[in-house]
Image (cartoon, rainbow, N blue to C red; front, side, top):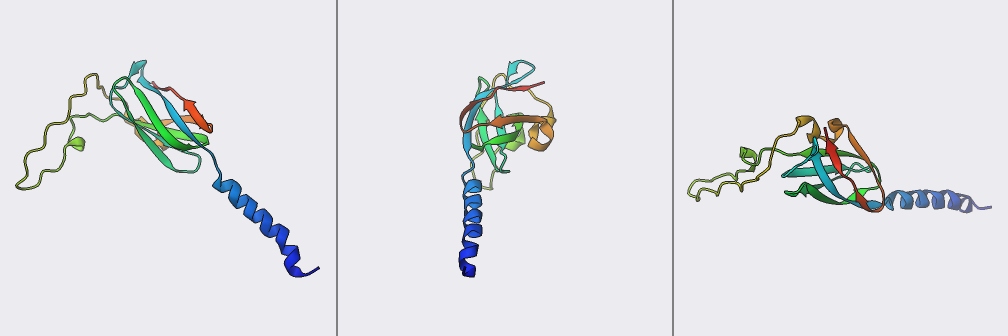
Length: 140
């Protein structure tokens, strides 16, 4: 048997392994974010998928959110809800430009503990399946 014939099954298995890794599924996630039972009115939700990729979505005024394309498997989650009136959200003003408008009012905003701001320290993990996922993120 020629040496090249012997390598074919090994090469074929290697190719199949690469295809399997590349075909890892994705899921879309939606739900509500609450802190001590009260919906968050402003902020973001971030999912670190099983592939290490980060996907993020905005929190609406009723606490709802939507994040698309999260890798299936166990995901770490972070929630950020910084003060909407902070300087983090004020555009830089350059010399000669008009003063930017003030940030919009976010009625119902309240602070949450900083520990939730990073996926690696929030303690929040959820299993993501392919397709649509409904996950209510309850902060305590």
